[in-house]
Length: 162
Image (cartoon, rainbow, N blue to C red; front, side):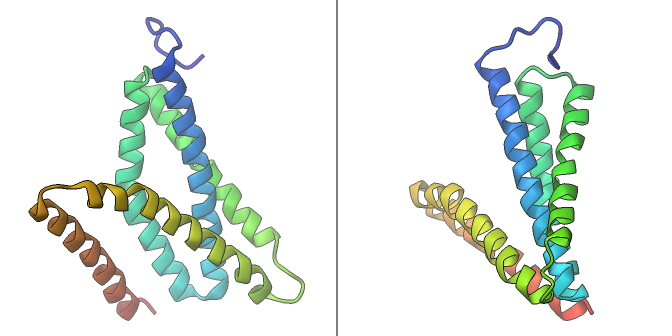
């Protein structure tokens, strides 16, 4: 359907489509988190947006590479990657539309824990096993230091964002 004319659909193409589905769901939860954070306060909204942007830039580049490897041409892969961003808009709209008549607190009470839990689960399932299997202690230390520096960047941003 979206593949190069010389490519036939096979396991690698299926992985491309699965990646698009996963990316759309991921973007939906990002949209939920951003909208709910702005419902709490401008500061929390900006910090959440910054954290997601810092995460998404390398993530989207990686997803683009996955689509290229799956047999999509560059233009089609770019269009499909852009279309997955609509999941973020849908997530934001969903968060805004599901506001409780009792107030923003009711809405945020389930959205932020849901999205935070999902992000923590993904991080622990994907990152932690790799760190535990790493045999080179220097490489493990580098990754832990980078993780800590990311946390410090967010702490520093929280001081400067009003």
